[in-house]
Amino acid sequence: MNPLEMMQFGNKINTFGQQHPKVVAFLKENNHLMKQGAVLEFRITTPEGKSVVTNMRMTADDEALVEAIKRIKG
Image (cartoon, rainbow, N blue to C red; front, side, top):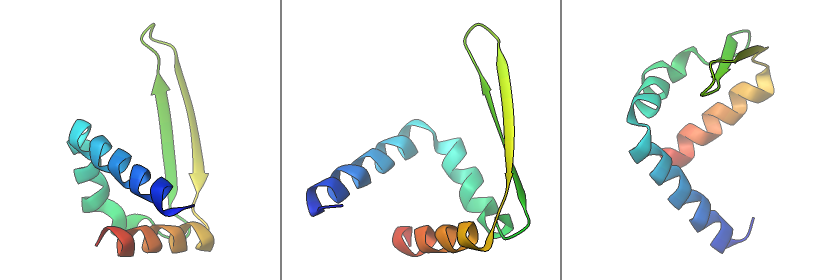
């Protein structure tokens, strides 16, 4: 990723945080739970009411990614 792309990505992350403060607060409050073996569940509900769900069990690589993101965001 070149420096311009990194700057644009950072701007998009900041915009996301402003538009979805509850999500950011939830992740900050619970990031210590995101470790190997934890199961994350994702649900998408369309405007029409259709709902789809999936989940993932965190691996050591996933945990390392979360830690790296925490270091970047401070």
